[in-house]
Image (cartoon, rainbow, N blue to C red; front, side, top):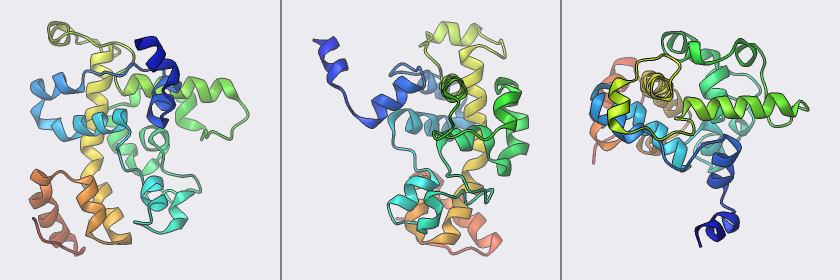
Amino acid sequence: LQHRYTVNDKTKISAWIKAHNMRNTGSWMDLQMRHPDIKLGLQDIGKIRMGCYWTAQRLAKAGLIPKMYIERCPFCNKNTPETIEHMLIECFRWNSIRHETTIFNIPRLYRTVTIDQSTNNQALNQGRNIMVGKLLGGESKETRSLLAQSRDRYSPYMKELETGRFMNGIRVVRTLILDRYNSADVSLLLIPFESNLQVLTISTTFGYSTYNRY
């Protein structure tokens, strides 16, 4: 019966998970308990894995920011859409945070070449997808005891943890930049309720529009 469900599952998120060589579960929930300081970044990993993370491309397709950002990244201004792959690997806006977190888990090839789904080199596309899958927790679902023991930089635990730190590091600035292009609706999609107060403070400091907390 489970095999039948798997075969008949035609959803986009299932196809995305399969293309990135991931299982349907990850360690991000267990990691939140051990690393509460980056729990919002780890929650973003969960959103990506569940298909509910709002990239700029997705926001543009929904009409929440200008349509030009369907094919253009608003953070680095390159003529390539902000997909999950672009955000994690390529977007030079986040280079400093990337060098403090995930850089050791990204092969030089993928750091120096912009690859998209239209690229003819299928091997490069497939290799990058698998590598992104590993950054998001990979194939393994480690037990909590194994999570506590693992300290190898290249273990699935550490890769997912460093990606959580990366996502945590870009989230506020990313939201503020997107907020320039439209209304508070974007912020409400990207920032959890509990962190709205933090965004309000930063928005006031940098002169961006503010909005009420519900």
